[in-house]
Image 1 (cartoon, rainbow, N blue to C red):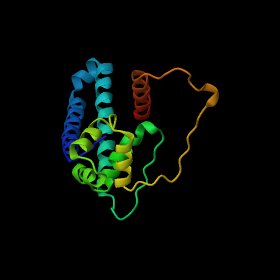
Image 2: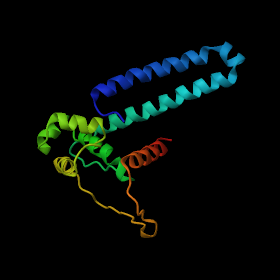
Image 3: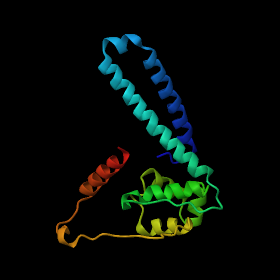
Length: 173
């Protein structure tokens, strides 16, 4: 996810590099003929990265060019994605990290750290301050509590982070 203008500019540069690399591979007739499987795998890998970067750039463009007088609907399929919702909402509102910090009663350094770490070290109250500062309204929320399979042993931080990474990688694929 592209979170700011600097990351956007770097992403644009990488997009250009991927496009040039793909063009170079396309012209490499020797590799295509002599080791077609390796050539194909390299081409598909670059194409996959290119498409992911294009999607992130398109999302950033959509958020930052959104009419700030029109509400934007951001959906949350899993609580693990709440940090991305907060970051996307800030970008759509055209607020800098400093402006959000001022509105939330936090410091710019806190907001920068929270966004860099996907709010991992933010307190519940700080998250609430950010939600309030962005005037985020939750229209509908459903929480499923599967009582029959409720875990009866403590969850370690490592297990939680591991399951978060698995669910994030599934959503990227």
